[in-house]
Each structure stands twice: as structure tokens, then as C-alpha cells.
Length: 552
Image 1 (cartoon, rainbow, N blue to C red):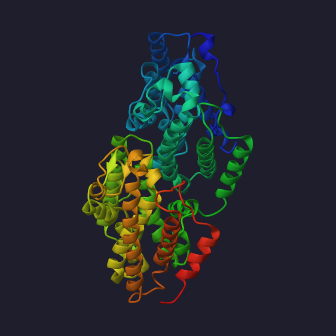
Image 2 (cartoon, helix red, strand yellow):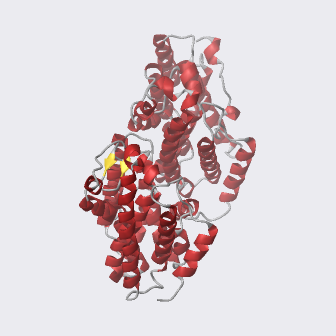
């Protein structure tokens, strides 16, 4: 093998994430460095610009045989062979990596997300499995370790997407996700930054879900040194994901800083000194905290277990809503929602995600019907269509029952007021009407029109591109009719509250007052003069808190 490919192009210190940090014991660190050196050599062969595909494959085959035999002519292979003989870890995982490197030689495009995940099963997950095997860790750590390794791999793909495309001719962004730009070339065009941003964010939503699944890894790792490294790695993954959300990797280099790495390792070391905290609860709580939702105010008023259950419901809603609103193709969205259906069906057996485990806990404590979770998913499937139109009042009511009534039905059980079921269903429809009126232009940009076509037809307005429909003066007249229904819905809710426990329903009342305020502002602005999405001020929020606290 030529010197050009036996001399490593990168060292462990050049990687984004810790490879063989000083946190590890010297014995385990030496074995990890041997694994890294072998993998780096194989990677450099697969990426060599001066070699044809057949020669690359021949060299990778020769490298594998050298690893199996411990051939001293290739020191990287001999060193890892010796490490495997000592620790019973290395050869199996390295051979899996070689499968991915061979794939890099012959495959440069991935059509769907599932294809990319399958690639990561061999290109990334063996690294985590090697470390677990090296430290004799329990099998329970394998699933979260796989999730972390896959997340790290895709983060690297996104970070290097411009460089991989220009230098290697490889694209790891799924092709079907890119095609909204028209072509591969168009996707990487600097002028396509807005579209590229939507695709990258949709991919990062999936990556963040993987990092959430990995969050429980430190709880399963017995070796304190490896636990510290896992905590640091998870922290760096979150940091890089956040950086990628705020910058365009096609236009500029995106990476974590040395200070990020220092902070991550300090967190890792401190994490070994205290008792692990339930990571699932922390994840759902963080999702609520980041949301800025007015509903958060109401959740804070709940007792601990009820608040935790509501966090789980909110996190589930947020996760599936992000799928429906993301830039993935409709067929991919349906796949992701189907994965959630399977998770919901596993709630009383063995859910696999942090949100699923928290939902299972809430379901057991408060007897939550899983049918309502499936109803919400039905609504999200409607939202996932490439072009959405609501044809009739019946379909509008059905949509509202699915996306809002389901949440209300779950919430009132957690609040401890099952007698408020009808109140929750009717209020859910009312709040959804306000959502529709508030988000007319935002939805139209996605070719969604929730105002029933049957009502538009009564005024002589036929289906057309969404932007054309919402710009027609007759559309504003239909909006006024929906606003009147929403006002009547709030009045009916006020009447129902005179017979219900207002204190227990405080979170729902806060949400109701928030939306009532939004409706009033929309009404004052007028239906034909929309200028961006309406947002409530701090004064508005103080007003709704005061109103919610009023006695009946």
C-alpha cells in the first residue's frame, strides 16, 4: 500500500468528538487508539482521490485479511489484532466498518432516510459497540449507544455536506428531501439557503430525537471513565446540532469550539460524581421549556406528577407536529408517523423512546386512552399531505377533533376532571379555529387551506393555489364567519366552567384566555390586512394570567 494512504490524514485530536480522550484508562485508551488508527486508514483508502474504485476495494479487502491474520506488514492491522486478542473486542466491529467503507466506494447517494440510517448501522454504530465491548458493558447500553453513534455520523454528514459534494462527489442528504430545490446542483446553490435551511432543520429534528434516545446511555454505563466520555460526547452532539441550526454548512465551516469541548468534559467528569437523574423526564421538560408556549404557564401550576404527565403529552405533540411541518417528503413523514404509531402501541409493553417511556408512565397513572394518541397522529397525517384542502364543515370538525380535541381529552384526565370531557372537546375545536385564522398565510405558503372549500364555494370561490385563495376578498368574509364561531365557542366554554372545577382546569383556562386574546387582536387587525403572524406581548400574557385567576 502506498505511503499516500498509509499515512493518516487526520489524528484523534482533529475529530469533532472525543475518540480516545485522557478520561479513559491507559489500557482502554491504547486499544481505542488502535481501533481509530485502523478505521482512519480504511477511511483514507475509501476517500483517496487518486485510486479507482476497483483498487480501493482490493486494498480494503487486503486490509481486512491483514486484520484477521495480524499481519505485521500493516502495523495498523497488527495493532488492532493484538488489542482484540487481549480485550476480545475490535475485529468484529472493524469488519463492520469496512463494510461501510466499501459502500462509500460504490454508493454516493441515498434516496430515503431509512437508507441513511442503514448506512450508519455499519459506518458509525460499530464504534460505540467496540467501546462497550472493550469495557465489558451490559447489553442495555447498546441501543442508546447506537442512537448516539448514528446521530454523530449524520451531524458529520451535515457539517461536511458541501465539502463531501465538491471533493468526493458524495451526498448524504437524502435525495428525495433535496428535490424540492429541483436538482442536486440547485440544492447546493448559495441562493437556495432558505430551502436548504428547511431541509437541514428537518434532518436535525431526526438527529435530536436520536440524541434524546442516547441521553440514557450514561445511566447504563458502569465504567465511570466511559460514562464521563459518553456524557461529554452527548453534550458536544447537542452543541453541534445547535450550531448547525444557526449556520449554513454549505456557506461556512460549522464546528464545536475548544471551549465547547472543555465544558463538555467538565460536565462529563461532574456527571460521574452524582447520582444519575432520570433522563426521560429531563428531555420532556426541556422540550416544554424551549417551546415558550403559553400552556407552559398552566403546567407550572400542576402538582408534580400531573405536571410531568402533561410534559410528556406536550412533548409527544411537539414531536409529531414537527414531523408534519418539516421539509421531509410526504412519504417520509408518513413513515415517521408510523414509527410513532408503533411506539404508542408499545406504551404498555416496552416503549423505545424517552417520550414514549414518559407517556407510558403518564398513561398508567392517569388511565390515558391510547386511542387519543392515535387520533392526534391521524390529524398529523392530514397535515403531512403535499397539498391540503378541507372540503367541508364535517371534515373541519373531524380535523379539529383529531389535532386539538385529542389533546384536550388527554389533558382533562391528567388534570383530574374527567367530567370536563365535553368541555375539552369543544374548547379544542374553538382553539383550532383560532389557530387556522392566525396562521392563514403561513399555512398557504405550505399549500394548506383549512377554511372549508364548501364555504368558499358558497361565495363563488373555487379551489385554486393557496396564495390565490387567501388573497381573494371573499376569503376574508369566510374568515369572519369562522371567527364568529370561535367567539361562540369561548362563550360556551365560559358557561361550562360555571359547572366545573376552575381550579383544576387552570391550565386549560390559561390556554383559552390566551387564544381569546389572539382572536380579539385578529379581529381588530381585520381579515383582509394580514401582516405576518400575530404574537402576544408580555402585557397580553399578564392579562390572560389575571383573567384566568378570576373566580367564576
